[in-house]
Length: 439
Image (cartoon, rainbow, N blue to C red; front, side):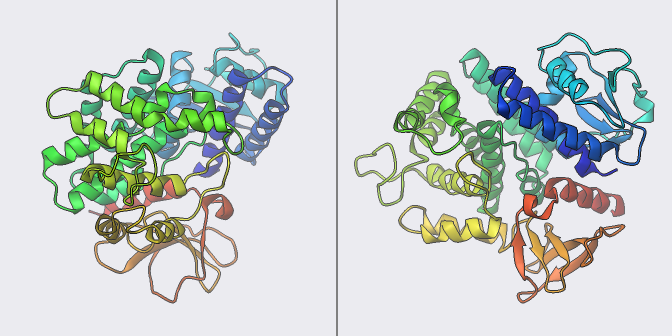
């Protein structure tokens, strides 16, 4: 029973819940989502009579093992289960479609209870905290969750509390410990159903990492982090439905989206204090190109330094993330796309520094080697590409990730996570834990 199966079950449960909140009971997309949940439950319980998913101290546990990366990826699901006072979910082998759908309805508040003797049971096998693998959540992960809560709070209350946002940024500074590698690992977290929130946090993490890389002071990095976290805050106040369309945006939806720089700048200016106005400039300018194109028009002015920096990372995270109208692209492909716009779309000097920081293959990149093995790039301390073998040539998984150095001629192809069936975030976390254990 792998962490990947646990993540896939949580992902399917989250999707069913989101679909229930958006649609009627006869919606075919809802039926498809429930089918995916049934399939995920089968994989999760394969070889076991039952599996216990626990919720404790801001984390999911599969039986006794913490799913830290999945806890961040499905932070809103974790919070929903906590609000419903769900401490554990027991999934029996052969869990029925109806019981699994009822579980999703319970989590999102569409139902009040589950049958006591069903194939899915709530709070029936709650494990004691002492029985769980209770390693503390890292400071970065806690700050990541706090930042998601802060952005959702803007959506729910339509008000922006900059003090709360700055507290999150301070948590990122403290949690990273000056190590950009930790931020690069955390920035691999995505959630396709909550694109705006996760995208904003990832842009914040990578922007602050690049700020430290180019030598910004702590105060400058703090202001950059605030600006980056709020660069898309205008998307929270425009019509959210326009951002959730399956397929390309209509002219009306696109007009809504093009308003978000101005809306974001206005919201930040209304809430900002002395010295924080630069965050409003970043919100306004992050879609303005170096050649003056993009939107809105600055009437011949060039965007500010922080705006140009955030624009690069905004584009990088967007390209490497799944969107309703196109699939994700690999990190290496994203860097090539950015290079094509050097000097016209993006600041060439900042882009060169960003690529230098990320490396040719950024952490989390999945590489197929000439022998058929699949390796994942991990943060390294020199110019060599450090990686771990995560799948052998015969398709099997090694008992422990095997460290290697990847040379220039050692890459047959770069793979997407869904294509490889591998969750880089969980594996990066495992490698990071092993590194700390050896120190």
